[in-house]
Image (cartoon, rainbow, N blue to C red; front, top):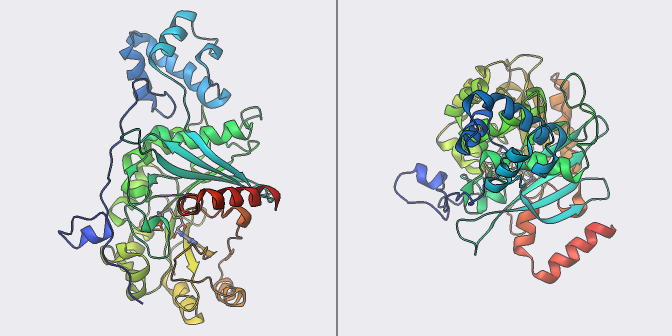
Length: 410
Ligand code: SAH
Ligand code: SF4
């Protein structure tokens, strides 16, 4: 099996260009920007820009922060601790807009999926990303996106076949969490005193939607720091997981500047196979990747790195692979997460048979690792991350309606 080397949006110059796509568009801020997702410093600067004196800025930021991220207000008029004049002035220059929801699907198992429409460089071509809420007994996990499309081109991933349109802004990253809290009526629930978001429906965030977060480093860092802020959305960094396909130079930086939990999309135990599945491996091979994991700031038995491993029939699912996987991560505080491959139209791969997944998982388990197989959720609405956009893009209007009807009635 050979991976397609040439991705659509490359300049063809260096070999790295075959792996890394360039953004087609840049973000164009609207005339009236939203305050959602600005860092505290950026919010203070925005207030300064409309004449709030410097000595008042910290206090105003704290007040607005509370209204935005603890109370979830969508209207400046609700910010009753601010003077009427300031509220009017804020409304004249800013909005509290969240990303627009283009489609919502609710699975029989409670999984919810939102297709979000974000502004494109021109009005004629808006950008779309997805965001998925997965309820479980002890937690509620929100899977968010970091890019429209992806810089990279993993061959088993539908997003990898798409163009990289642009990076999301911090506001669009935080906006996904804020929007989920709106839609789930989550603001009304009590925030736990530990600041751990326990009683909220959205208790955990995983950056496992569209895009490679470590190729949108600053926005992801700033956005996740807003999400983790203890006086706001309060989702602690132990409950935030950033998943990367292995952008080695940014892994240590992520540990230092973000400090969230880390997941690595490993998927193969030899460079030869990983070069095919995750072409970025040609630039940052397994040895460098595992070294970066060993040295990840803060890694310990209490803060393990998750290794994701997608189960591809006849490709990476033999017991030899399973044993090699155990050897490979030896010495790294690790969890291993087996993911059943979620097929998409036109893919060359199939999901491993269930018996193979079980046998594979047993080898991992016997080596001392809990090896949960990620249960496919929301199958009725194609809810695995990376699927809603791909599905709706490819389908005709009639098929889209049928899909939606199916999701509603199944
Ligand atoms: N770009 C990042 C995060 C987004 S992808 C990364 O690659 O880690 C999130 C996870 O979903 C990754 O482990 C990715 O390899 C996996 N994935 C992508 N397509 C998939 C598919 N069709 N079936 C199962 N898992 C998939
Ligand atoms: Fe991008 Fe992750 Fe998909 Fe690879 S698996 S193409 S890095 S979204």
